[in-house]
Structure formats: C-alpha cells, structure tokens
Length: 351
Image (cartoon, rainbow, N blue to C red; front, side):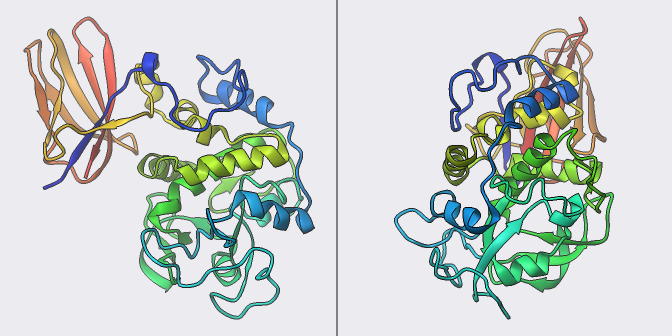
C-alpha cells in the first residue's frame, strides 16, 4: 500500500532545524517572495572570498568534503549510502591527474558546468558547487544537464546514470545522480542561480540554464529533489566549512523554505501558511488526508507541474478527510477553500 505523509504547515512555529548562520545573517528576507527574495539573498551572499583553483580547492576539501573519522574524500559520485563504496580516495594522495576508468583519482566537479558560463571564471572556484568527485564519472557527466533516466546508456558503480531525460520539458541526454544526493545538487544549483543573479552578462545558455536562470523544466525537477531529499548533516557541515573559507553561505541549506518562496508557483495560494518543514506521519498506512473544518467550499489537489489532479466539492459539509488512494506516488499540493474565501495549503507526499 502507498504510504501518505502529511507535511504540517504553520509558519509561526516553523523554525529551521538546520545549520544556523550568524545572528542577523538573513535580516531583511522576512515576508519576501519571488524575485524580491532572490535579489535580497543575492545581496547577502555575494560578498564572498573565493579560494584559488590550485591549491585552494584541493586544500579546502580537507574540511569541506572529508568523511568523518577518516582521511577519505566524501565523493557523491561513488558513495553507496548504507554500503561500501566501490573505491575511496585519500585526500591529497589521489588527486587527478590522468584517469582511464572509475577509481583512478578524484578531481573538481563543477555542478554548474563551467561551459554554461562560457568559462568566464566567475564560479570556477566557488566551493558551494565545486565538489571533489571521481574524475572518470565527472568526465562522463561532462556538461550535461542533470535529469532523470529510465533507459541508461551508461551506469556508474554507485548507480549514477547517463541517458535520455524523462522529465517533461526536455528529452536530451542528462546525468542522474543517486537519490541520496539529488537534494544536495538541487540546493547547490539554486545557490549558483541566486549568487550570480545579475552578474551573468557573459554567461551562455545550456539545456538546463539560461545565464543564471534555471529553466522551468529543470526547476520543477529540482524543487522535487529538494523536497524528496531533505538537508542532511553532511550538507550542514559542508555549508559551515565553506562559510569558514569563503565567508558566505548556501541559504537553501540554512532555510529550505527559501526555495519555495522564490520558485514555487503554489506559494501565493496560501502565502503565509506554506513552509517546507517537518514531516509527520502518525499513521503511515493511511490513504486519506484530514481536512476537518466547518463551512468548507472545495478541495483541490495539484501535482508539482501545477496540474489539477483531484477536486472535491464539499459545499459546506463537515467533511473530515479526502481520499488520495487514486493518486500516483509523488508530491502534491492540497488547497482547502472555505466559504468565506480563505484557504489553507498543505503539501502531501504519497509513497
């Protein structure tokens, strides 16, 4: 049976559970949405101090991407969560160099490919998106967009896939990382989009981007990745370590709600009631969502593409729940409308 998880939405008590920046770091973002919030965040994080390409990035990885208790690189392209990586790299000893196959060496992977910026160098050494990864896998990913693949033309040893994209809006070749790091990558790309906002005049376009703007098909997917793979302790620690080096933070790690407030088209439906926060599932086996309340008018369910998938006309009845067993697994937004014109938006994850 599909499991249903209801995300409670209450901004008043929605305090971020993630890494805390210095007091006042995000002052001025309160109540902002869309481009206004994007502009404000840009002004906060733009005054950074990038390290050098060599040896700066190599040295930074000793604190930003070191596996706890070891001297190994935390490589998102070879890691097997809960299992043993097919190979591991010792920091400093296994830097690329030349390579011919997986497991030869690690190098510096630009999640936002340098070619997307016409190699102008602006984000070349920005640690928030330049990760140490296996050189061969990095090469296979190349400057392809990230996406989702059903029929892979190539699969890495930890399950990363190269193949045609299945996400609506683009069907070319993409690279799909494993689920464990999809959120990490989404938040890194969102960071670049905001950090270099209005500073991208020399940047080009790609299958995924137009200058510093992430294309609609890709942003829809990245928002879903951001939701399905929440911020991890690894990301919190990495954000803090990068902050110590280049003096700016990834706001989407500190406060995941920022992503919805900038890019989610559903935010305005219940502008002060939707927050990406804590999942609660007192009854994981249920297929109904509580909508208890008097004088209700209607309930609408939308998928992440903004398409209406389910409607319930309650017409003032004291309806207590809505059955979602007919929905496929995925993320949905439930808008509960009352007769007085008010509305409450809840996010529903069906699994």
